[in-house]
Length: 396
Image 1 (spheres, rainbow, N blue to C red):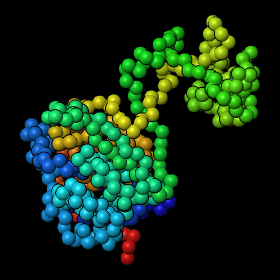
Image 2: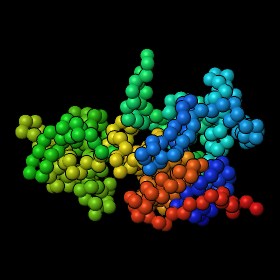
Image 3: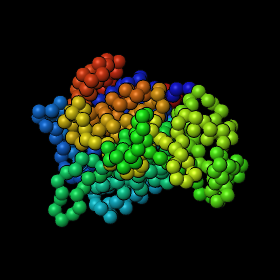
Image 4: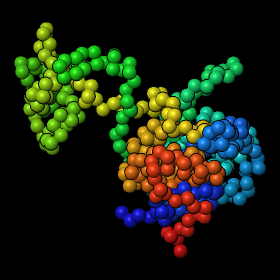
């Protein structure tokens, strides 16, 4: 596939992201992550003793943010989005309508630069996440919605007469083409090992899982093996093929083997447990062969920001969260875009994972924090900082 991207790899733009996005070629980016300022009504300032000292941005929005030229563009290009904005003004007020106008015109450009095979993750706190869901549906189509991911952020003091607010929402949409999706895993919490890996032998700790499934199946899944015939009781053999692939990575024809042959391989590798009472064997899965837990749409065990990550940037997100998103929805060499990059977490992680990245932020402080972060932690000097929007090469 021809690379349509007209921005040099690993570029941080300082300036208005709307103007910069308008200079990026259409359908040229593989993954977009954005964590824009929220609609909390607060002013955010970095501490004076932090790397980000002097950084300040607002979570306050007014009717002045409903610029006529932005609304006209939204009306022309995405009329359904304009209806959502108008509804938000009636239901919530002018601050929400101003906020959605500001984001909406930028999301239109993000939709344009995203490849049909690409994915976008929009990070929001609960103040606006439900309105943003309607905005994203109007832009990407409800059919392309994949998940609302709930991320439990570090606890904060409880408010008065309400539940403690400890989560953000991340809206995940994919393009109309077959989007990137990689299997990723997160580390199990300590209590998981105590609960499930309760057995041990000379090789290490292990858990026992069933080799028998309910119901009958065609083929040889219900035949007798080593004197056990699950088919006679309306059940079938349940061979963990992923485990077999890990035990025998050199064998590329595992799927072509019969069920008894697969069970023989499993037993020959010492992964079948024969109980002293009863005839039904079970499978031994050792701790050192456990891949971790596949992430669910509620993320609660990523931990806080590590000390080495902290820049003092308000609302900075942990690298572990971006690591999960980038590994799941992109491949090495893909282009990752963060149009509100702040302290640059998405760009830092993308670079470490072998992805190309584009960051945009309006604050000069972002460039200073980002430079210190990359040079101190990674010793990298191959990135560039730009203050002039790129020029599109896909239009005449």
